Image (cartoon, rainbow, N blue to C red; front, side, top):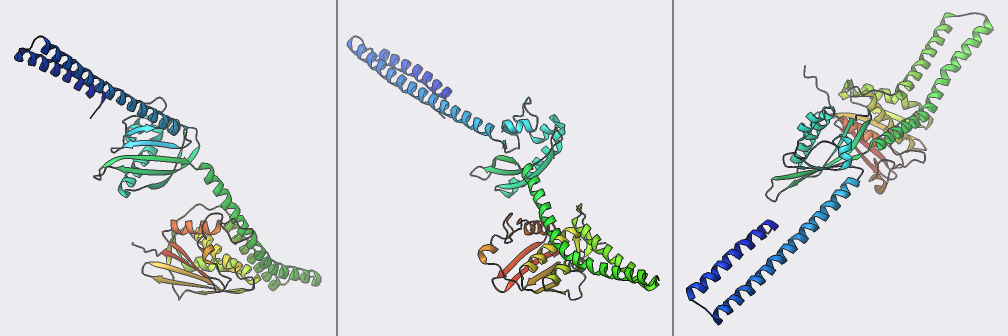
Length: 421
């Protein structure tokens, strides 16, 4: 390889060999006078030409090295100016280069990180030990995948702030398939996640507001009964036991309706445990039935007598079914039917929710589920996005089929819980 050092070595060896060779030639040929002069001139000319060649090679190599140094400086300036975490590691997971953002993030400004693994850096900066250990795990996952991999990582900084990063890892390989290195790029999406959380809360409040209209109608009925019996007792000046029982029953009914609304609106901590699928669906139908009645929509449930057990967060899945059925009701402004069928296939419970609404075109159906895409005038476009995410977190699937003028069918598939004990 023509490095600067090798060029100098070759030049010195050539000089020694050439001088020795020409002097030996003059000695053995016993050349003197004009012949010796010719040889000396030829020796000098060739020596000058070769020297010029090596000098040219040296200058060219110097120019190449200078260009490489400029490119490295430009690359270093570029990655250091990025507001993202950028890190290069070798095939053994040893850190080669990290930008200023990364050094500041992990408090490595005054630490020689070069050649150290995540495990070794975790010993140097114990506060981030768990973070570095998790990086080792995701690195290995990216290596095994053999292609660009994406992860979401959250951790607490020394300042006590929780940071969330959208991390992209790109494994690099030699032509023979051996590991070469890995590039990690992490973008801070903390504010984005916070904004999404606020928007999801707003969407949920919007759903609650619309459900409240139907629930208010349902509450008005028992209030009317209570008012009537109270007025009757005031006029007759008698307190009848049956009247008291009716009033108490109606008050209990109101309490139950309000409790259902509060459960839906209250922030819930994820709690995964087994629960009957038909029980959750009955709760949803009872809760949203008020709105369906106001919109002249009939909800029909067919579960074939099944009692499928699902392992997951009951409240989250209730929210999913409410979003789907509510969308079906809104798709039928002139009334119609929502048919809900629960079946079991192999180890999965399948919920089919079919309406007789206006349907969705293929162009719009392709965008359904994307954040902020909505068919509603006042919607945020996050209800179905949230529903899909919740179902995926429960290891299930959500699929939508629709045809304009014929209605929409939503298929939700969830794993059946098997009690191994």
